[in-house]
Length: 628
Image (cartoon, rainbow, N blue to C red; front, side, top):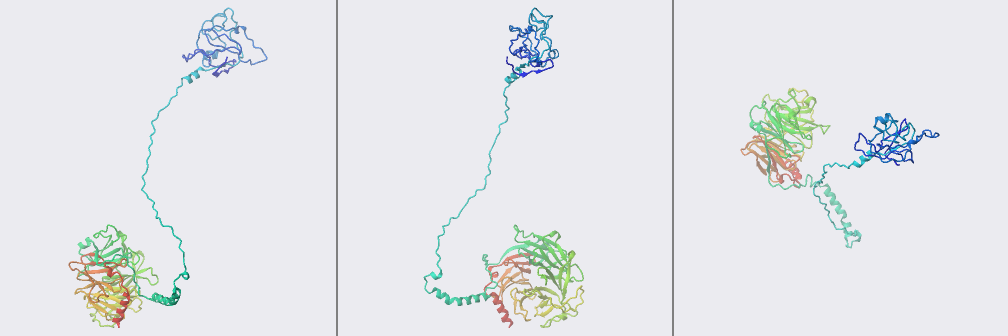
């Protein structure tokens, strides 16, 4: 008989415990009877009636001894017994604790069975039904596990369906373009010796020396000196590009006293103060800047505003630092601001010391240091007669490095001058201009109306009792014929080392040569004051003047030496125009400030910005002819 399922394990009594197949399991009432357990491999054991337990002997533990088996155990097959209860040898406590007892729970089944625990053996029954013996192992197949496998059903868990989507990013459409050219065709180069032009080689040999001489002449010629090709659009008229103002200054009836362009030519600055009668030393004023290259320029809102406790009389931007600007005050003090930080703009100041001017400062100028051209000093002039040179020191102070004083007794008498007032010793200075060819040479305009040629290289001490921490020197070297009143402006020519212009209260402009006292030319432009005159930076024979009648007059000496070429109306009510400046970087721009507190930016026409051929030579010829 084949057995299946879990193999029984031998215990101390020689049996392997396992599930008896075919016995009713009280713990599993639904279990089915299984195969029987018999004795021996060849025997056909008889089942116990009322039970389905069949036993098979295990191997004897001592093979040299014959097992003493009761023949009553070897009975033939019996009819099928009545089904009895299932027994579980693994779990039934009675079977485990009493393996020698009979398996039947009730009276014996009858004669010869020997399986029940009845009152005694019946007829033909063995004296003992079960004894302790070592038997062969038995295997019992498990229907319980099989039934579990049979009853198992496949289950699945349905999850939510997975949704997928595809998205794409639309890129900008691009197109590749190519330029198709014709394939180059090989060209056969032929040397001059291979040309069939008769006489060409002999001609080139004949004219070679002559052509070289003409080329040398052109190389040494100065016919095109200073000439630059202008690719800008031709401008036929002078137009107003911007009208700038600061309403708060206009509300105080302040006037534009000075204008200046920065090193880049994109920013214009103006100072507000008063040039007419009255004591304005205690009235606050302003310094304003506008960046003309900035988008959304508001002409009534400056890019930067600095409030100053005294009237500002003059301005000058630093030559290389675009945001640094110097100013002279009515109080005599000189200050330097950084306009890139309006909240804390003050960089240096002279302070009120013995070295400070005692009268209003009418002009300031930046000078390169003699030994360090990239460093600059600041020069200031005043009607107190002093010309002072300042240098930045620590703790925000301007320190005096050199000083000059104009004293009446030391003015050269090479021309007839008015007799000074009794007791007057100082000569008031109202204007300043440095030579473009000699950094130590400068021209001063005075309250007495006469220009002075001066030098910073002089060593003569000034005869003055004015207090100063340094000894003052007398700079005057030459005196020119005077105007009919005080000089308000002077300008040296950038194209000729000896020429300069002056403008005064007599309404005249004088053209001087430094080689003689008398003016080369005198032009009457107005019956009122002339407050400013400036030489063009690009045209040798062009200059501009600001009049007390509200006009800006542009002169071109090539066209006329007696009347202006163009007259521009700055103020409709003929209020004075106090200052003007050409833009050195954007040479087509001219800035002018007036008594109404307005700064206008004028765009010049092409005739004032394009240099004509031989214009420099014409200026040299004019100076030589008149001087002779």
